[in-house]
Image (cartoon, rainbow, N blue to C red):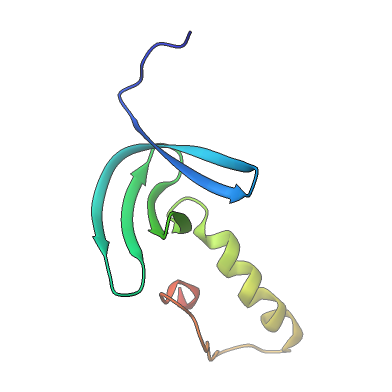
Length: 96
């Protein structure tokens, strides 16, 4: 049996029959809004994470992967991309 850890654990359901445990080092914010349960947690593996209704939306460690895949196809197709218009960019991370 593994020794106890100092972490609290957050379980994220990924499919109806699977999920993933995240070690939480601290919860920075947690509040129910009129639209969803909003949490900002710091995880041992991914750093700070935005969690909505129990699902991780973005994290410091790998957030760039999602946003790079949104931007690069358009940048590659244009011969000289100098400016860009981002519509529906969510929390604004795509603008970075």
